[in-house]
Image (cartoon, rainbow, N blue to C red; front, side):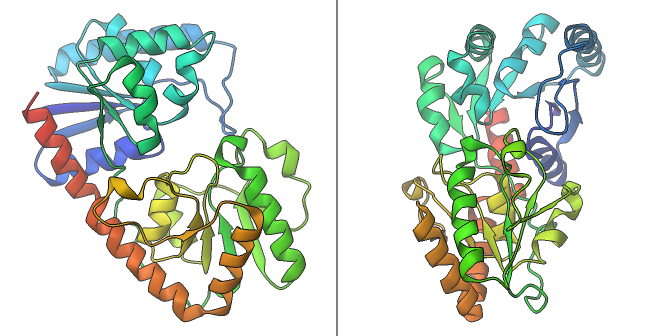
Length: 325
């Protein structure tokens, strides 16, 4: 079986391809032109011309290589398959259907892309509600975590260090997270708090002095970075865990976030749950005061991710879907 994944959204396709290769499937990744800049904003100049060129290039490669499956990521990118004239699977990741289904510009191409896909997958449980509007047959595929890349390391150099791991985006509940961390810093001045200088709402917060903005790192170096922190802070708006939270858990770091979909798994993930600023501060302070608790929750999180999100087991589920197509 020959499989082509298109568009590396949040490193999910990269991890799926790596897992598929590990189980003996000829899988490859193609990165089309997206027109998105480093802050996650859409560039305007040249987008249409570059994308049309990409459509032709990708269609030519699909015909030449005779792929059995073309698996496209991000909902309206299904247009690549429609305009290229080949059948495709479509994988949804968040904003691509959460916002774009009702968007004045992206709504129609998103709906058509979903409707024309051979099969539709989605990556987090909250997306079921949106996918069901067009494709009630859509299937949840857990995000794949490279547990051999993201793995536990010693805690000795991470005490008192906190990483806010989600991008600076109101969709991620960033106002709640940063409000809590500002309170935390005022009560615990010695605590070091870092986050990435990345996201559409960065300009609103970049002058804050209670938090350090650090550069983003390559995916292969992300696990090493996470291991420098005692506690990882996730998102508080959507009630989900994205790749970043799961990767932090795989590194055996305790994660403080809001997660509403425990019943989607046979056992609930071992998280430090919080929904408001005071709850977040309380959970972080307890972890900072109890290094042993950090270690226990971190290792339990590692085991949970290995059980439910390991990239090889997720690749096996996907391969079975391909075979049953």
